[in-house]
Image (cartoon, rainbow, N blue to C red; front, side, top):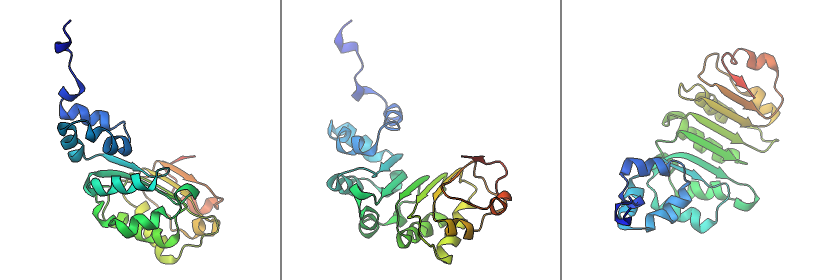
Length: 207
């Protein structure tokens, strides 16, 4: 068979390339694939299902990805203040407008401070059709009433299917749990009085 008849990656239709991108991280797409050729540059620019995973990333790559990707094209966001990415959440919120990320479906926040948690919850509680929310706070964090109210509002969203909370014991027990919600996967990394959760667990897969 002639090599001229073998289809190249560059000849694939846009829809198929987007399906391939669905299985790649934003770093590979934005920092490698987009520079292959002019066509790939255009296709990656218009791709609208980016998943930002910043749990382990160099700061210069973090900035490059955020600056070159339109917020409306991002559906998943992972931010982390762990040791290797300390201060990342505050930096992201100070430089990039969370309000512009209107299509977020999945949000993961690792070791987030309460002030930043409140800012993000204010946004996703009113705008985004969230399906997955993972929050990991310091165990001794004591969320104020407004933060708890915002978190409860997110839990009530009809779109939310997965909820994973690592919060302080007092925070979990002060949280207002809705009697009816759409969550199907629930993980609480802390003790909780069963009576508090009982009314809200119908249909949950408790992990």
